[in-house]
Length: 130
Image 1 (spheres, rainbow, N blue to C red):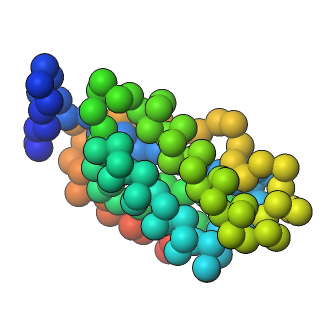
Image 2: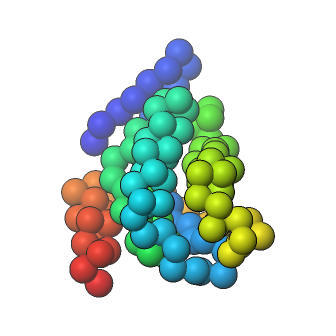
Image 3: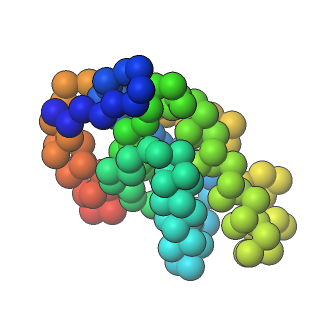
C-alpha cells in the first residue's frame, strides 16, 4: 500500500468515482472525450490528487483517484465536474443547446479500502469491453 503524507497526516485515501452527463446522454465521444480527459488530468494535478485510472464512456466517467483528506473527495469531485462543464460547453457549442448543464448533480464515490488497486484499475480499464 502506497502512503502519502503532508505536514500533519500520513494517509492512503483512494476513491472510485463515477458521474454522468445530464439525462445520461451519450455525448462523451471524441473529441469531447479527449478534451475531458485532459481537463481532468489538469484539475487533479492542480489539486495534488493522484489520478490512478480514468475511463470515459459515452454516457459516464470512471475515475480512480487518491486525494489528500484535508482537500476532501467532495471538493475534488466538484472541481473535476465544474471546470470541464464550463470549458467543454464553451469549446463545443452543441453541448449548450443539448443540455441545460453538463453533469447531473449526483455522483457515486466509494473508498477503495483494502481492495488491491490493481483489481480496481483493471475493472475500470475493462469498462469499454462491457
